[in-house]
Each structure stands twice: as C-alpha cells, then as structure tokens.
Length: 168
Image (cartoon, rainbow, N blue to C red):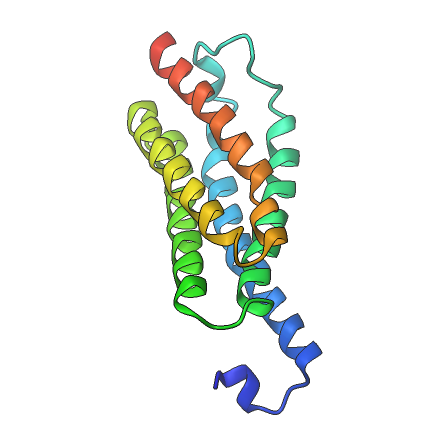
C-alpha cells in the first residue's frame, strides 16, 4: 500500500495527488530545460547556421509546454489508471528513462554548446520514447496516444539537431 493510500485519502484525492506529482516531475524537467536554453538563444544559438525548416524561436516554448502537459498526463494515466503489474512498472521505467534523456538534452546541446552530443542523446531519446509508447499503448491507449505528438516533435527536433551538426 502506498503512502498516499495509507492516509485514508479518497480515490479522487489520490488521483489528484498523483496528477500533481506527475505535473511537478515533468515541470522540473521543463524548468531545467528552459533555464539552460533561454540564455543560449540570443547568443550562441542565434549565431548557428540552421536549416530552412527551423520554426521561429517563439514556437518552441509553446510546443514544449503542450508536450510537457501531455507527457505528465500520460505518466499519470499509467500510474493512476493502470493496475500494478510488471508491464506497468516497465512502462513507467521506460517513461522515466526517456524523461531523463529529455532532461539531459538541453544542458548538453544549449548549455555545453555540443550539438553532436545532443544528437546522440536525441537519437537515444527517440528509441526509448518509442519503446515507452509501445509499452504504454496496450496498458492504456490514452496514455500511449498522449505520447504520439511528443514522439513526432522529437523526431522533427532530431532533424533540426542533425542539420545544425551538418551546417556548423
């Protein structure tokens, strides 16, 4: 029995607490990424040669805010809506693995100004994210589908990362 359940919370209160925990966890990753990325945009990133399909800088925080919310909802559904099982543990572990790779990418790409290392990380992220999606879909279709836009965006972002490596 979890600590949340042992305190005699109603199922609705437990669900809300889990949702807040998921939003907080993903929010920390978003905040770290934003804190590292923002100072690099007007200086280092602005000076890079970028492909013609690079969106305007204003599109990134909008897209990522939406994606981080979808990610948190996916994790919450896996945690709250799926019965405990080895498959659920695996899906959540994969989710946390891809989240860790997501958390590392911005400090490496923007903080260290290391597009090649960033490319290696984003390729690993795509692989682990695809495995997460594959693990989540049979458990909770909504949890899996909530990750689809994220996977699409990360694939697109990887093309930008690769082009930056080639152009600079």
